[in-house]
Amino acid sequence: MSRLVILLLAIILMPVGQVAAQVNFKGSDAASVGIYIAGISNGKVIASHNCKKVFIPASTMKCVTAATAQRLLPAEAPFVTVAEICGEIHGGVLDGNLYIAGGGDPTLDSRHFKEREGFVASLSSWISNQGIDSIAGDVIIDASAYPSIGVSPYWLLEDTPWEYGAGLYGINYRDNSFPMTVFPGEEVIDAPYDVEVVNLVKHGKSGDVMAMRGEGSSILTLSGTIAGSKGYSSRYSIPVPWMALYQDIESGLRKSGITLGGNCGMSESGERKSLVYKSPSRDDILRVMMFKSNNLFAEGMLRALVLHDDGERSIADAAQREREFLTDAGYDLSMLKIADGCGLAVNNRLSPLFLGSMLKDMASRPGYVALFPRVGKEGTVARLLADTRLKGSLVLKSGSMSGVLCYAGYKIDSAGRPTHVVVIMVNGFTCKVAEVRKAIASYLLTVF
Image 1 (cartoon, rainbow, N blue to C red):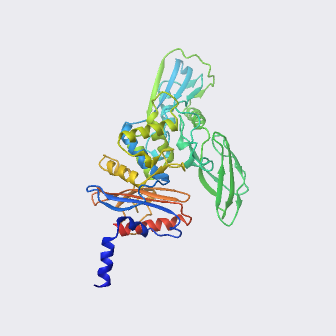
Image 2: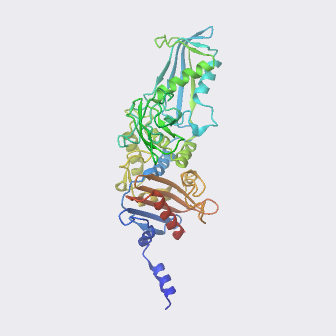
Image 3: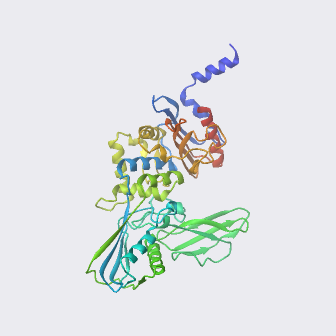
């Protein structure tokens, strides 16, 4: 028997679980790898390795959040923000206040929905249309829909100053973040929303900027090094989003020729009129969440599960509601731990088998597969498999953090229909993430 025939027989007879050995990178023996790849129509398992072990999922946790949101939240405008004017209007003067009631909308004036008229612009136009050119009272904002602490207790302190670590509140505004460029040794005097920047950044051979800011604190401390002379640009979380909204409402009214008296003790007697500002649709929000790996949107969709409940409506309450839903759906929660909706918490846990089973169940759900970006073309997987025959033939959600790289989604046919569920999870590697990504891409090319 020829060596070629022997080799082919060995490959054909190889146990499925051994396929995972092909995910090779520097230090892969010390890392943990989990794989689950199976056909959707026939359930045939193509590859399985450590599929019942739990892993840190990073942003592939958003696959679970998206599935739950699609099942439990209304399709149209899952969030509303209500503005109300109270008081008599005499000669263009409102003898009363302007009230804003937050509804937990994570998309309020988000840069990811530029085609929509923003809330502040809509509000200014609406007040002008009421014949008001002066408000004797003040803008009173109610952000009590959610607790005042918006970040998960399981997030790392080092994450929360950055945009990706922005908390979710009853009022969210402009992605709860702002852009800023800093230069070594230069004082920052133009940071928005009353943020005080302590700039300790220095010149160095490489770029490594760190940020620190306590929850609700307006003091942002930057340290580390910047290479070159262009400065360092990034986006940072807003300490108190409702205060940022107040400032921009005041500015927006002024630009529209409407003055604000600032007397919040005005009487509430008289006529009441309301503006109901609706969010984008559920799936439009989920699509941005999945394509951009938007953590704020993910937290918003998870917390929306308890938005209309009595009680605290905390992150823990929302996670419990999601667990109840998954239990009722028949899933084994021994392979799942939910600490947030976005995957930023390092104590989230998922098994490849759990995630693969959920993906299989959701494959026929209208619109779910369309939430995933195509490899080599879109979103956070735009460079994965970009120069290979698999470009565009898988739709995957990526997830990464220090020592973690995961992918979950589907293999699709030429018509965009899902044929296989694909879950690959790698934890505990010490090499560069690019090496692991390359190893996963090579592995997928051997499977499909």
